[in-house]
Length: 412
Image (cartoon, rainbow, N blue to C red):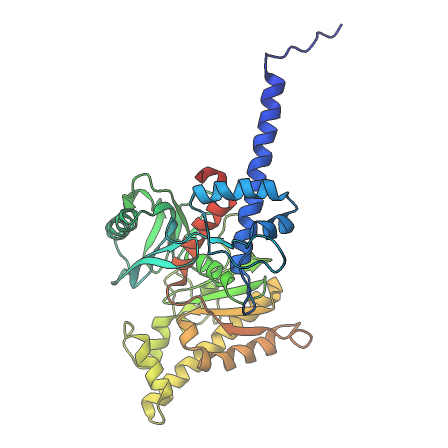
């Protein structure tokens, strides 16, 4: 005989309450997402942000429910109201809703070969604080460099907190293989770092810090611009990294180690790379490689190369142009392999490649046209990045804030 199921007093009520609580959180996410998506979308001249009624229409929720949930977002300082605008029909003026400014913020951190950076963004996408310090971090001591970045970040965080802002967390961008499951840095050849948990040396206490690859965070920064939902982002610096975005989301694969286009071999008989292999793309199209081939010092400012490229005539000009042509040819060859493997139809040139686009693009496009099997039917579009300098800092801060919007219940 089956024993009757026993139930503790109030269990049914607890389950019902739990379901109701889950529904409220889901609806709160819907409302927050509707407001933030509207803010991110292009608007025609004269268009205004959505009101409570607009959000109700967009989400399918009742106006009363939306009004209650918007009040929660206002109290949590995730959303703010603008001045009322006259209603198009008879009735009360509509009150536009927008992401709040200078309330909850996200922090982007970065260590690269020649700089350290901290950038703070608010929910409206504005940069509210930033510090970038130059240096030479080839074969550096990770503990010392990360402690220096942590001190820089602590000063910036203290400043925004003193201004009444709440810091939601940080993303640390590193130029190397970062295990997406553990957050550990496996290897960063150009820094000379390996087998490292980079968070403790920062000394940022209880501030949540997530570690990610620099190029992947920079790719995410492009999503705020006018790009298709799927593209390959190429970050050119001393090293060369890549981020594959598919349908608006970063493709990480099993461990997040994909996108290392700088170590695609373009000539097995070429020079030895910092990774130990020979003929990697970085040895032809990395920033230092281009500068050396142009007859400049490896640590020369990129502006000096651009000035040569824009000059009229002379042996130095010809050498500089030849260096960029060689880099573009190598880049086009490596990118063609990537496109053949992934099938993406848009390539975004970021990092130093953005400034060199005018001279690199013809060679890259020619390489893609020659080597991509599908090019005759669907030519690959090559375009410059729009996220600006140190894009990984922006991408990192935005990732922190994306998680805030995805879980607004945690904030009030």
